[in-house]
Image 1 (cartoon, rainbow, N blue to C red):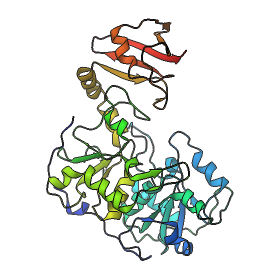
Image 2 (cartoon, rainbow, N blue to C red; image 1 turned 90 degrees about the vertical axis):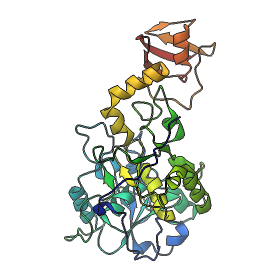
Image 3 (cartoon, one colour; image 1 turned 180 degrees about the vertical axis):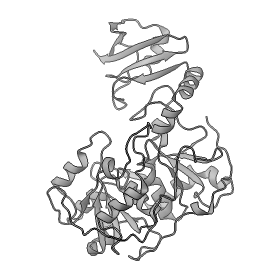
Image 4 (cartoon, rainbow, N blue to C red; image 1 turned 60 degrees about the horizontal axis):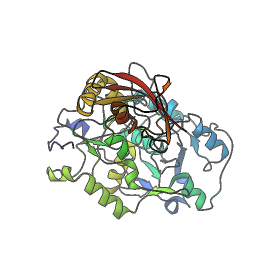
Length: 387
């Protein structure tokens, strides 16, 4: 098990945690409930930031079917991310100056506070937009419970595709760079890294889970899963109670407090690509427990930049490494070598896999296909199918 370095990061004064005005009277809050804003929607500029990692058209299609009245649709890939050039990072930050121009074109800065929502209480888009605005000094909020909570309250919806609703602005009274962002070269070597991916992705050792290209996590990182702070049901996805959220934060980051830090502002949060980590950052700001840095490149960039050394270490420590050739089907049943699965190795059915193959198959799920690199220098393609 990884240990945590208890160290202090010396940061430039220019990177001090952000302060913010509270024109709408929600002192220190980031997350607002439907009750908080039900009778004051006109005080906010509302943005629909629904997003799905596996379906690039999900947000726009969901918006067309129904959205909060006057909400402006935001595309995470196109408007909250930069170009994918010379990097394996899936959602790099856009150029700050270009994002400022985008904000001005949407009327942000006209005096109204911004309210962002998605359909996983901020985890899939809304908190990413909140963080980008927050890092520039804009007063912004996230709707707790998101679109489902709004619908559950019986409030009216609009339908149709996005259309221009605002008058572009000429001036910009806020910052012009993302002050709480760190690049891979800017992360201090003694940084307290906090991994907000789900637990199975953090703990993966020989095969990746979800969208990750390599298993594992940054050395000595603390695990603080984004889904540990949410109540997830089919009907509603919202934050757990404030008391439970605070307890989860204090437990997950116990080593930070043990190291003598009064809050988590010196920590560096990351996830797979800089989207879900912003939910955890937003929660800490909401609870008054600090304003952590965001390493936006996250595991998708880190694993790509250090892929060879990471892969070598995994093979050395665990005897094998998987390169997935199909989607990761973690919700499917496990596929050990048994009567339940047909095992195909390099295109041929293998009724009785040997011990080395069996050790690899134990990590697979029915329907998956992967190239496996063994410490013995054997390399095979394994596919496990239901009989």
